Amino acid sequence: MKRFDNKAALVTGAASGIGLATAQRLAREGAQVFACDLNFEQLQTEMAKLGAEGLTVRTHKLNVADSAACHAAVDAAVAAFGKLDVLCNIAGIGQFKDFAEISQSEWDKIMAVNVTGVFSLCQAALPHLLSSRGNIVNMSSSAGVVGVPYNAAYCASKGAVLMLTKSLASEFAGRGVRVNAICPGAVNTPLSRGFNESMPKDMDAQLMMRVFPLTPYSAEPEEIAAAVAYLASDEARFVTGIGFSIDGGQTGI
Image (cartoon, rainbow, N blue to C red; front, side):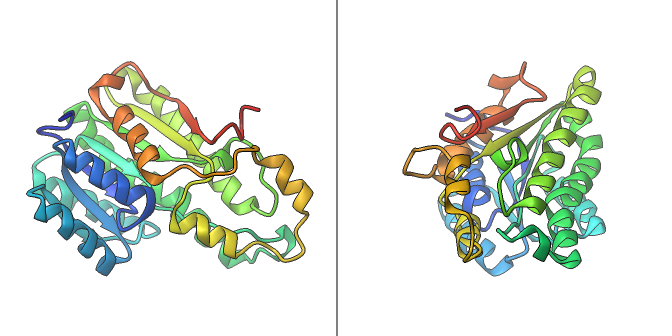
């Protein structure tokens, strides 16, 4: 399929995990991809592989917690491709930690990356998306839908992303811009592996088991990227304001 021929997309978190899988999927479906990540060395390595396939990809070092840098990234993407059709806010961070032990700096950093970065990029991109009648796909989480123990900061941030998505969708639906979110559960990514490594040693295992489904596996990044591609494509022209759960039943059972 070539659903993104003549489309320009900005993807954050594109050096690994869901962001990388999304950049790969959109590029292989014809998009010109402006790939952003703070880990610039890894980003360049991964995007060079797509360039070797003859695909159009530009790389840009971006700390999404920096509002001015977010605006500059959007400007650079539009300068590179002449327009912007799709914004995919996928960069994110998180950890498991006892609530009482979360420091102010940890809380602030998670909010800055997961929420303020999404806000800044959406605000910077919307004038261009109004011109192209484009769309935004934000990465929320199952942790933005249901409470997850030892995960207060991440839950709060991803709930904020989901509500920001719904607010923007309602505000801009009549102006031709769609805004959707995806709410993955466990996904086989470096972020998820980092979560597992930060699990408190004295956690309540039975409490955690009640939160997660019985399925003994995780989604793969490519499965989430497939959903991003659908929501960002014209096939989803009548879809806006949703939080699309892909979580093995975590929020539905």
